[in-house]
Image (cartoon, rainbow, N blue to C red; front, side, top):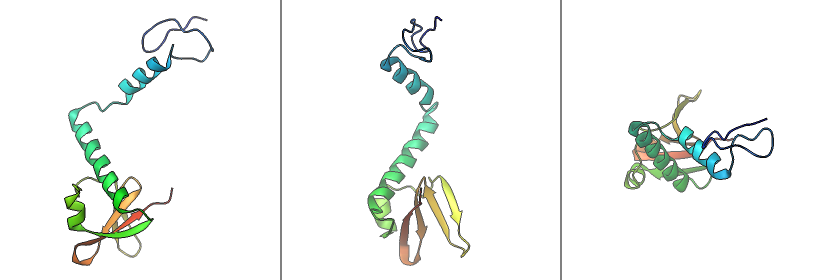
Length: 116
């Protein structure tokens, strides 16, 4: 059975289920498929990554406290998050993937991490 590499179209030698002739071609193909298609998407993903890094850095344990000014000084952007959780008690948590935060009184925030 003759198969060609999905990236460079060279003939594939080896296992029957191989799709690429080398690791380099596999990586190049997957990088093309998974790249952000527009600058707009790339900018939003960069902001989400930055927010995630900041929350992860400040929330070493599963739960901690911080201030609005500390988040802002590190470059946190409150407009970018991935989901909202409204609890039965009426609290609203904003999440960036598994890292979340909720506003408290006096510009304090509780930081939490979702169980996986």
